[in-house]
Image 1 (cartoon, helix red, strand yellow):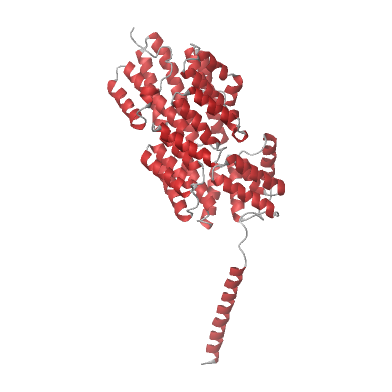
Image 2: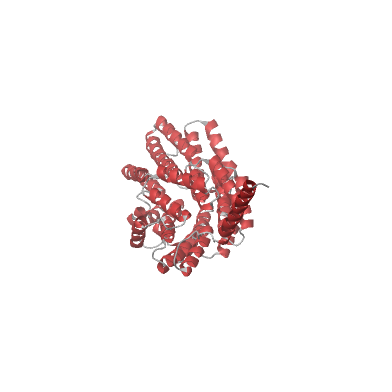
Length: 466
């Protein structure tokens, strides 16, 4: 071999050795940890928080995240999770929000830089920039479950069901242990009215995570909406037996008992919910007082319903409430009904001005607003014998139905209630074909609802014989 040939062989050999050494060195060098903290105890608390979060145990997760921040005041991503789980007092949340905005993140892991950068933009209303940052990060780390889940969540928020379903299936294929995606797939199917598919997803979720309460709570909601009340109750009890303070299931039991017109039992369940410290948000948000008002209203006890829906309750509900609106109409107070409708519009406007209007939240508010206006229009027009006015109310109820989804028991039951009113409205205005279609839609979902669930009729909605 020539001298140049030996040099070439030597050069190639040296390159191979150096490459092997480089690969070996990289293999021996540990990957940077995904979470940056100087405290191993803080890291353990944070990871316990993530485990609780994966199970939808929000209050428990917030406690772990708070402990992580207590152990390491510079633990930026723990502060982020505290904000996302509504942990801490308003004063603490304000401080964490400020500290997170001021935090230097260049030395954090790529995942932390992404998460904090993304939510900084979302918190400030810069959704488009947040999406650009997400896309950039996914281009570099296409298998990161945190980024994938965030991307799926954006499709979910805008009710892009095909894209969201595809995204969550891709997430599960890459990360089978990311079981929250099964719940989202079930809720997507439920929203579409694909109830068999929804049940399959929820039962698969329960099979994969039998020690978690969330699958049984989701299954219970589906069964309740379909009219399988006994089976729904069993599913909720299964959830509570797994985690006694699983607030969502305890709340849904109270809603189910109300649906079954077992109002005394519903009240007992509400008291049990109130006794659990971790479930205080249901009182803070005005859900408990509103449910009590609805239970009283359903039995015709309007005085008690009004007492439950006092100023404090209404304020915690954002200034408007479906039950309060019906009470106003029952009293013939159209000015108060309009005031409540305007309060709802103001709430929707505030969400728009935030820059991050979750489509499913905004759509539900708009549908609720149309229902309220429809019932006021119907009551007022019916009382005066204005058939055209009642027909306008029918159209508004139909528009509300077109926007509403069978998404969880609370929204699904409102959709069923709206459908029931729509069928009556069509009957009253001599539109039998449309009335039959509305009743068929109602009976297809819950054949028990129309026959068993009755509430007091509003003035002017009973007859147009004038």
